[in-house]
Image 1: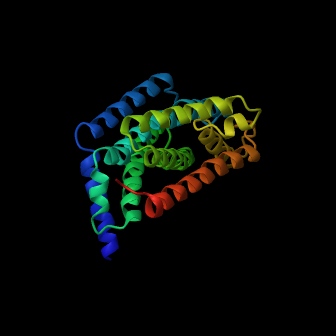
Image 2 (image 1 turned 90 degrees about the horizontal axis):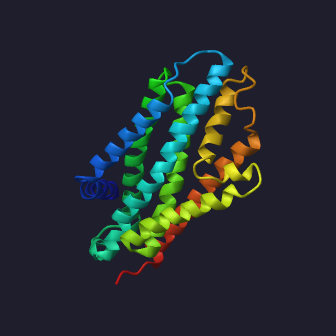
Image 3 (image 1 turned 120 degrees about the vertical axis):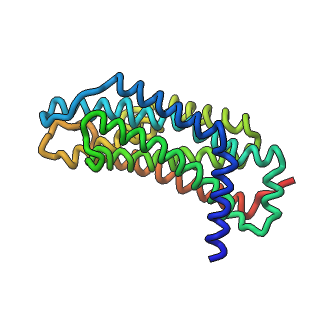
Length: 261
């Protein structure tokens, strides 16, 4: 019970400290701009014909899901640099580690707060985009897209967290995350198919959602016919596998090996 109270206290502190004005307001502003930009790209009403379903789904995944993942790349780097790396720079981390708080709870609270805020923000954008296009909030499109977003944000957050822990400098950590993910995107774009999309940060989630939609609308055989089970499995395994490995590295390093001067 005491451990749970400690985590809750750390989570509340993290929210208050890192999402005070103007950080949260900036996040919302960018999300709204993104929403308006997408709405101007595709405002196609829902129909049942296969040709229109293909167009609507493709537009939604291309502009909304891929766009959310791409933009969240910047925010994950920024938030974890602010939440973790900055605390090393200004010596606050040393102070917190001197408190009777378990290290794993401290790191877990930082990860959860940043992840949940980003997921709620960009998840709301995806839901609202789908509603604008005439889909129900509880439609398969919304559910599968939110699942892919969850996996992708976990992936991006795990990268940002391990970089922030290793570099310990706010601005350097942010740019390191950006160039690391950008470099990964450039590298995998030169791979042969289907690895060029399956190992892509932005295109992998599209493969996952598209394959699940194809299974759901199995009677409409032309729907995402190019997305194979291999592409779905590679995209899913890559992001989940990397997330697990980086999370383990982060927690083991922070709990057992990190020394703060």
